[in-house]
Image 1 (tube, rainbow, N blue to C red):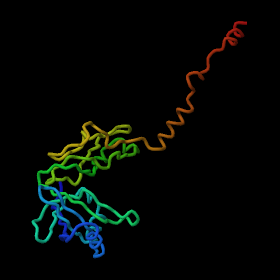
Image 2: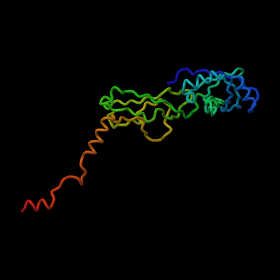
Image 3: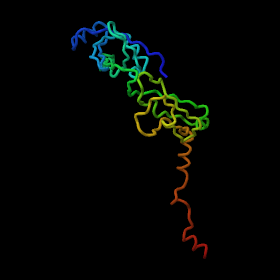
Image 4: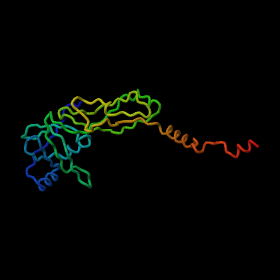
Length: 221
């Protein structure tokens, strides 16, 4: 489960519109907005270096933050959008949504595979294919899991592991209402190639030698 909620520091942005946003960028900040939670939107600036560091850490859009803005109460937020420069791919604006601990949100949560040492298919040289490295779940804002575990113990070559076999934290559920595949174990490439060759060498049904009528007549003579 998720641990301590990390802090995210910001300052109130004075002024709104493109002019104020451009000034913020010249000062080394990234402009943003905090909305939702039954409170008026709050324009903010976030230090560029701090934001870039968190973006590089990964899972920025799936992490709950404790936003600290001077003169305002701390509030839990989650980023809903990061606008980037089309050329430099650097952040130019961020949108955050205020959350209560009980708020339900959709997030993509990473999948962690367990039981690989106990999967017969892998011991026989099979290849694990992670079809869905992340799964979109409905989660509670105050209890966001860092990952979900999927046990593949007992899986052989050709078998699949579905969402029904994953250990989902209490209060979470998939956004897809069916038992979809997360991982499979396929045959190693060498074995698959040999199977293809065997099939190619096997005579087709209409190629199986049969006794020709002329041969039968010759035999009778």
